[in-house]
Image (cartoon, rainbow, N blue to C red; front, side, top):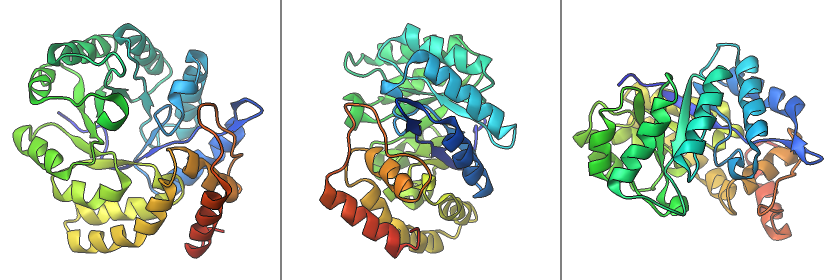
Length: 292
């Protein structure tokens, strides 16, 4: 399988103002990301509050990202749903708007058997010609993709790898050894360098919303084989990463961006504002990193 990207893809927040997506703020963020050296943009994922966005809002956001990116980096659209049919519809809409690929989270709440997971991804992939990346995040979905599912997913013509966000590096290393042709992208910021060391192709990052240049550099260092240097940079980022996950993602990262003047801190229920003590700790961390 040909990787859709290597290096850092930013899981973009969805800036909001007065109950609607704030496209002016999003445009500035996209330019910051591209100027910071990221390899891809990923709108309408978990960090983008996808479950709280309408179908039309998702279409508009993907279209806007594609227009702003203007071919400089690929745009990978989130399109997961408990319904394979609905996920396929989102994927097809993303392709029409010019997305380079889609990221589809495993079916959540209703879960699925091994065969059901395979058929879910086959249904989505059949609806589009662009690559489809699976998203394995059992902490949110209650389901982890099995070896048996991965084996059958290799037969899907446009299946293009997995975003592995279980937090289990040994599982990632196992997958890269058993399925060496399957691109594997890390989905946990605290494990970016370890995922590369385990054979990963790249990372999908939340912290790169704040520091696109630093995360892009970490990825480049990993890809050059300088894993000890990458570990040093990973450690330097560790305190900020902890702060950005001190509450449910994307609450802290959107709050941090608001503190930096990049967007409003507005989000949609059930996400809500951080407690004041957590906000104070986050502000202090951003100040310590020279971001305020």
